[in-house]
Length: 201
Image (cartoon, rainbow, N blue to C red; front, side):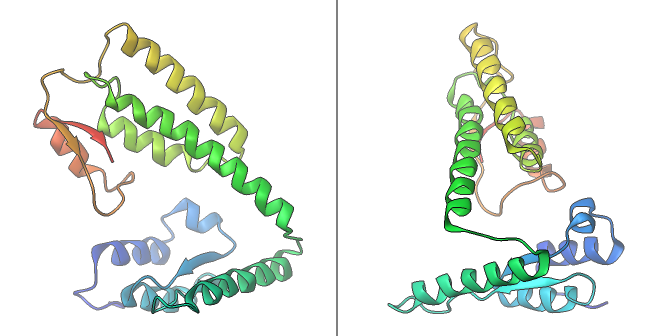
């Protein structure tokens, strides 16, 4: 009713979640920080602003010497907005600490994802999707990191013992394209129901 019929399904479903208030993450959010990756999203965020505060990062539209400075300025504007709206102080040291924490989380997740390189894989593609999606929402990152590290160790031990979640003869599939998350993981499930083994997202 509100978006063009031909607009991409990702945008329509995202906006639908907002209108129906059916996404707990969006409901719990105080602000949506978004970027202008395409015209469809720009329109969606314009409409979404009527329901939820939106801060829009304007991507540089050309790649030239000024683009990096322009993009950096967008983040400076975001910092000023967040400091004002939430009465917080965002310092360079806090940003560096947050980057280190997030890098540790990514490395812990990578250790789990890398287990799928084993043949047979000790983890299914659907499990990879679930692990990546669910761990991204841990409010306490240290708890999430510890859980991922424990999971990688346990699954690695099972793989060392020759236990696999998939058949060693299964075709090994790398799935690429739009990021797959819960709710859009049907392709992974279909591949695996047909005997494939999704080993890389």
